[in-house]
Image 1 (spheres, rainbow, N blue to C red):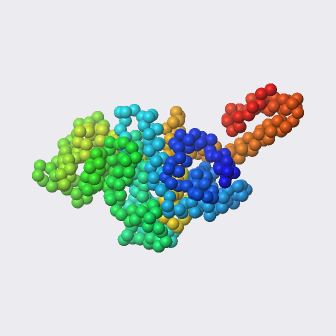
Image 2: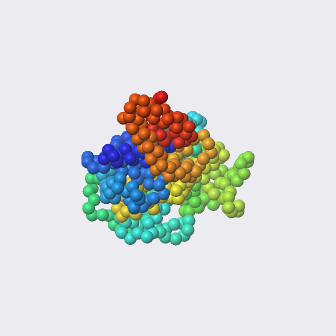
Length: 453
């Protein structure tokens, strides 16, 4: 096991090692109870799965490589990912809080921080026996898919997005596979399974509660039109947060001067806005049916100029321009979904059948994103997360020769120690001269050696 851990530390990309230490990833892993009494350490297995993406290989390709004998068997990794007793939610929350706290120190006090709630497809179209597999409709493509709804809560300050919590939602009505019978009802895995059968509006308040209890701060909760319903809005208000969200023209009614108006009728009752920002049409103060005061802003549809969109805010003191500006932060979660699926191989890297593996692997993918987001926030150039990811992949491809070069230098240094005094002094002198002439990016891979002449 000692050999495993030493080798794995060498396999971490050079630019990721400081982030692992700064965000205390392995410490949070232990604090979440993700440990083992014997066998290969969980910290090693976590790092092994974490760096797979940077090698451009999945686990089976990794085992087929020339270095497969230096890694544990596939059963060790699958037992780790399938363990129902590991508190992956707590680990992700601890890691995200650490990232948010460090990010907040780099952020102006005038910048608004928000929670963002949204769901995305978690597709498993080729699967049949995945636990809690269900059928959902993709409203964007107007077709059905097999898989889950990945309900996600994130934090953002408009510059850095950090995933905080998630739940892979199944469905009682359209379920293809049911709950596994062998799961222990006392475990975290069983609780996550029961949660997956609940409606999304019942899960979101609990997610916000956990984030607030962990020490996160935000002023608003941003959501799209699928979540802006009065019961959920009231639940968010009860927690001291305001809501800004898109509204769709459904059967909801709004109170105005004792009348119940539809969204269409409310638009014609609203006052036109004189704003320097193009596309802002009208605004009006109104109430949701239970009596929740809101400010509704109507903006022009970007692609269809004849249509308009409606955005509500429970903070009625905000200007229409500020409401639009804050709501624009919601786009960060869409970028996050795209990045995790296209770059970080969410839903593709492992094809396990247990619900525990889906949760554990999704957590590891979210952890990758958090480290990339922290690296991106620290960087002073204009690299995107995608460019940073590709750079780290190139870094990993250099590790094989870097390790070999480091071992060669250590070998020469050890030989010099065993040689005679005069020969030893000559070897060390020549070795030091050679190291001094190397480029700085190669020196970074070499160990610190005492090679004084």
